[in-house]
Length: 75
Image: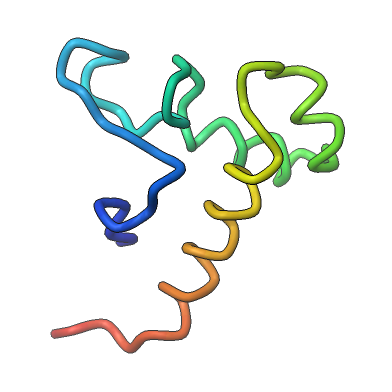
């Protein structure tokens, strides 16, 4: 599981979307990015569909997730 606490592009607030991780300053859940990419959307399409999300935020989220995948899980 990714630790999003250290990613500046996202935030989690208990009063917004039931505490789901969202792109900072928006109500767009981070999960929406991965769901759309999995369905075949491009990053450009995602940014068009969710205009409150900025390109730097998407890059930061993807980089953060890629780095998390490189670190062995603590068992």
